[in-house]
Image (cartoon, rainbow, N blue to C red):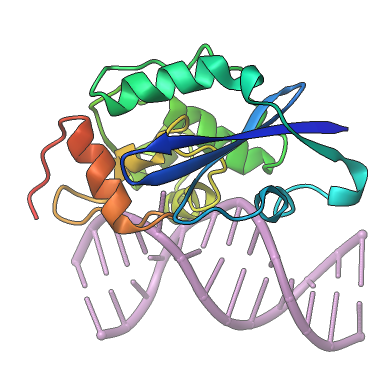
Length: 171
DNA sequence: CTCATCCTCTTGC
DNA sequence: GCAAGAGGATGAG
């Protein structure tokens, strides 16, 4: 199986992207450039795939991310994504999270309720494994406006993204 | 502070 | 395989 990857610059560092023919499946922040295989091996057995650095395949993603970081209301839904690395529950949580519009927030509990579940804590657990940061906007899921909850790439980044989208937080 | 809640991962058969 | 236990990006009291 072929896997294509590329890096995108953003104001606080880099974003690593990887896709296979089914769609994009990794979008993660990095502070310093790690090797692509270190990100991919988290999800896929490297022995079964070939990694290829082909920036031209990411023109759509580059365009949308640049617009997003320039304070535009970007809809990422045109990007074809592949969530097959997650469990059934994780995929349900991720898809529900992807429905939250730009500039709006939900709580862990409200996501659970939409899924007819009382497992609000399990929602947090699923989001901690979100492989597609920003595209699946897990930064829009908070506890309350006084307690944000966590963020896999660091709470400062979560604050930055909320502020970028014009969401006011009382801290 | 405690305890309820539920999905996932690990461990020990 | 299966079952029990631990532990989370939580929430209510």
